[in-house]
Image 1 (cartoon, rainbow, N blue to C red):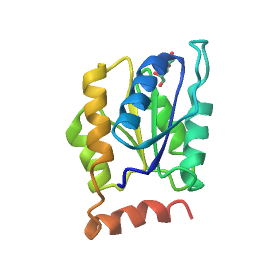
Image 2 (cartoon, rainbow, N blue to C red):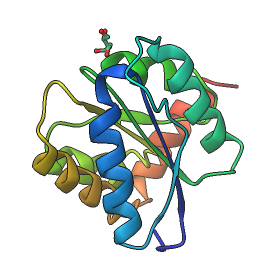
Image 3 (spheres, rainbow, N blue to C red):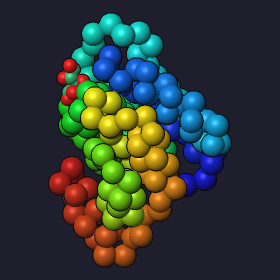
Image 4 (cartoon, helix red, strand yellow):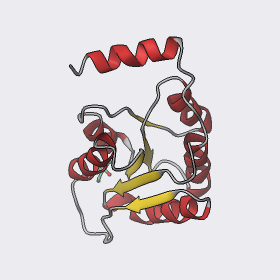
Length: 149
Ligand code: RB5
């Protein structure tokens, strides 16, 4: 992943603070963070935020997405409904590397009520610095894509 890669970020109300910290961190590291909010703590519905971020990735406007809700689960489920999106929830750095290396994930989901800021930033870096290995893993990702046809 090159450092001028555009990364869309979104969340629900449960993860606004952590999302903004991640956006600041990845910008400082040289990636382009496109933070599409929400910017307030007003209660909101995670499916629409997962969908909006996922559509920006699926359209090619952004190359990767990072989305958050309380657990990371609901917003991940919404994002994965959009064709071309492969999004996984990660609570550890090994999984964050592997969803890139083996699953060619283009979105990462985090649970702001599950992990702390320090681990979240390490997971994000692991995701953004790992590359898809291709080969037999490409065959498997192709099988997932075939289900969308
Ligand atoms: C919102 O209360 C909460 O349900 C949401 O952030 C998320 O955890 C859903 O998966």
